[in-house]
Image 1 (tube, one colour):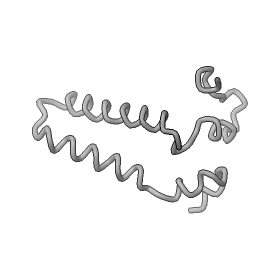
Image 2 (tube, rainbow, N blue to C red):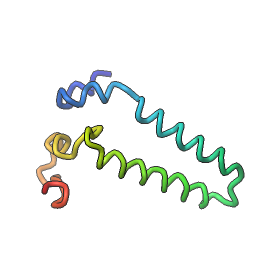
Image 3 (spheres, rainbow, N blue to C red):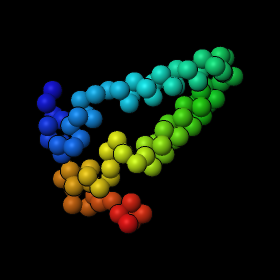
Length: 89
């Protein structure tokens, strides 16, 4: 229950809230209801995948990012885990 306390202090306020996840689930629900009936399972997967990619891009470029790669990377116990060269620059 208190596992989020192991994260840096600047992330704790964001981790104890599920607001971003609830908003994303609401957006997926709204978009799928707009379409109504999907022709097959692959169509649903494409729509939801596109929404998740769009949201990931949005979170990655926000000025006040939800969580930055720079502050999350040091949390790994694996010495081989590091930021990709593009993110580290």
